[in-house]
Length: 70
Image 1 (cartoon, one colour):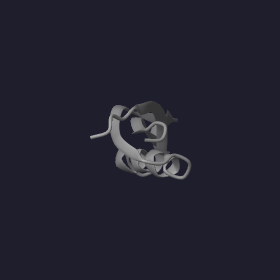
Image 2 (spheres, one colour):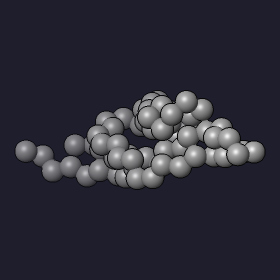
Image 3 (tube, helix red, strand yellow):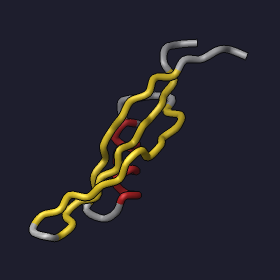
Image 4 (tube, helix red, strand yellow):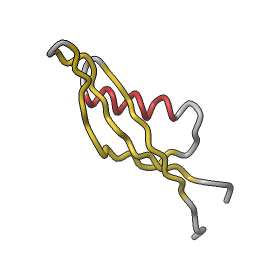
């Protein structure tokens, strides 16, 4: 078995629909430039409010990916 190293980054995804969609947006965007994504963890959920109305859902996502070559 080969030992591995993983890097962890934090992203904030947004959506006008839901927190689930916001988290999905963050992971899908990251997957376009990062390889070997491993685990995504939701660390915080919040909403953007304007004039008393929710206008956006935001999900803070901690994402790990394999770092370096084996």
